[in-house]
Length: 347
Ligand code: MRU
Image (cartoon, rainbow, N blue to C red; front, top):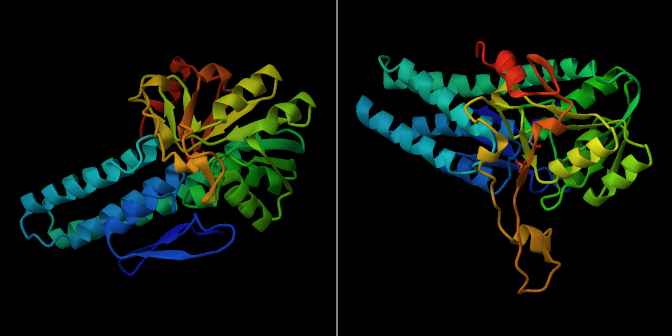
């Protein structure tokens, strides 16, 4: 399996996704600051992987706190947590992972500082392992939606690189392929950061899963020709009514899929479901550097004085979603009522 992030002897190692598919370079993070940089500059990206990176980063930060009093330790820990919370605003897994570590630290406040630091390290590593386990369950749950060898369209990268391993939407594709249910995977290039062209194809080639690369504006044409059997994407945040916020271009695909009667599936761990967000419109959409649009791989493609928009994500209303697949099962045609009954019990 491809490893995107790991913890070894008090350091965090991150496979630099900006360099893929040309170079496999690993970034060594000796301090939490380096991890925040890796999240900001997208050396590591994908909502679950960002969650894992921020948990490991916070654990690294905790180790670096030299204060011996509990009050000062917790004050500094919260300050480091805030640094992570300011890196990328849209994906909820980051907030979920940081909350999980802070709550655990608070719960163990009576223990020694050395013990608390060790508990945080173990928990961060645990979040990584747990994510892989959950992804395999998501894969299994998604299998029942694919009945024949299918041509599947996917967007962005939702594989091992975007998670602890195996992947969410790509995990469903991996599981389906292992059961002979995948004819071909159509991969959107996913402008502007090209996660599809650079990363998803790299993973599919690695696993020898038949794949075809297309530019984002070709999906409608392929659906019109009846070539696509279903669309499977991941999510950065799923609201309490089933609205899905995911990589820019997802909404366009969902509208196209609806028009062509192609099922549109969303696969994500339940940590991506944010029951505190009432509807998708309430999610902050990250706006990124205009240079991502003005350039391709650092090469300018537009004149100097052209204004640019660069929202990194968009909102797909739940009415366009055929099913949400998580490790807890499948919610078909999600609505607030179904989401509440599926996700409000237990954690
Ligand atoms: O900007 P990115 O590359 O972090 O965006 C990633 C996506 O939008 C993915 O589809 C999403 O995080 C799900 S990954 C399992």
